Length: 222
Image: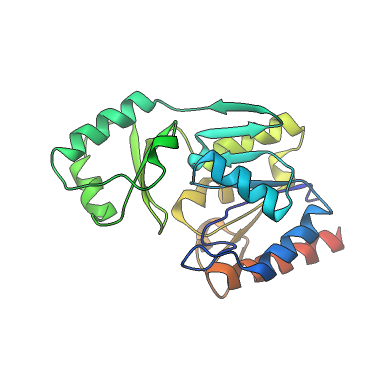
């Protein structure tokens, strides 16, 4: 039985320019009427708070790839930001990396523009323990290796009293892998077949529409 949904934002219910797919939003609102919906993004917390208002979700929020979790009015932060900042300083001495917009609002990780590839950044940080580099297609994130959306979803599930096997998860990027792998029902947008029960034919918002239509079918069955 599916009792809650955790869903990514950018690239999942948006196009490549991060513009909301309004048909996907309409379908998501149908889901909201049935079960709690958790927005789970790599972006900053205030971004997910604004998105929740505009989309119409009222469930917990996961931001910064699991580094920030908001349940009700309470916000918790996870991970070793000091270690991440140390990795960034080390990296900045070796590569012309640049922080992404809104970086001053991040509390648990550092996001970089994609002018330097994720592969180059990972190579430069080889042997730099405790941190992980993730490319979300919109930015490259340096984060605590122990922080991810899956662990954040487990934290939310505990707070809601819902088993992880009763969660559905929808996402499109490597930063969604743990969340998809841990959910009882997982839907990958245009890929991530190895951690998904169902994979959409298309990516971005078109895939989001397919994923949400599929989920609504499953909810009606139950």
